[in-house]
Image 1 (cartoon, rainbow, N blue to C red):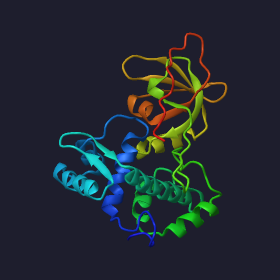
Image 2 (cartoon, helix red, strand yellow; image 1 turned 135 degrees about the horizontal axis):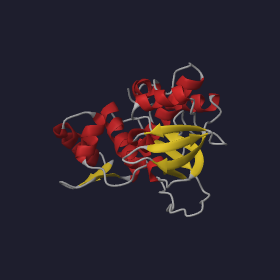
Image 3 (cartoon, rainbow, N blue to C red; image 1 turned 135 degrees about the vertical axis):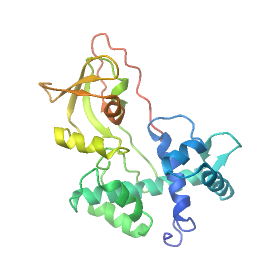
Image 4 (cartoon, helix red, strand yellow; image 1 turned 45 degrees about the horizontal axis):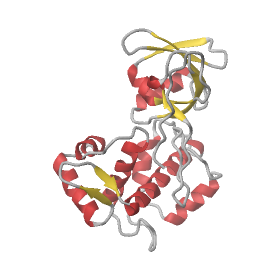
Length: 246
């Protein structure tokens, strides 16, 4: 369902909205070029479907793409993507805080609902929720004007031994990760310290201010957790954090 007249969403189909959001989301935290193959995998569609839709995005002035090259958003495409990301994350926040959904349950619901509500509804929802800055997974919620404020964060598998910080984002790509964190009692803003690497891809993670509780985490979990950490420790080799796209 299209948005109200005059809205950035007014002429775009739900498929177009999904594609520009996917282009934005793919590189939001990890950077790098977005290819047609990346989009096919993320949206679970055939490469041929992506080729046709990317051509449509180019025709609409929402994306730029050369044959075999990466896909990038134009300013208009980015504005549409941010509007959809804002809808998605506000709806996720509403489902968790007001309707009691678990943070592992809201992604698919928000995917459906984000296409069916008006801009006026989204603005009232934002006000009702107290204009939250982040969604249940720690992803920043774009403001109505498209501005986005990101935490200074590193992915856990990029930290060196001994680093400490707060958990500020959890990727929602894998609901099992979210359920595991619930079971272990590790919410957003939990204090974490990376102990020592145990060989292979296993990491020792200490939880709490005193770090008394230790867990062994695998590569899947380490890639899903983002830690806000601005204080280096002795022997720290950590580089400057990657700045997500603004």
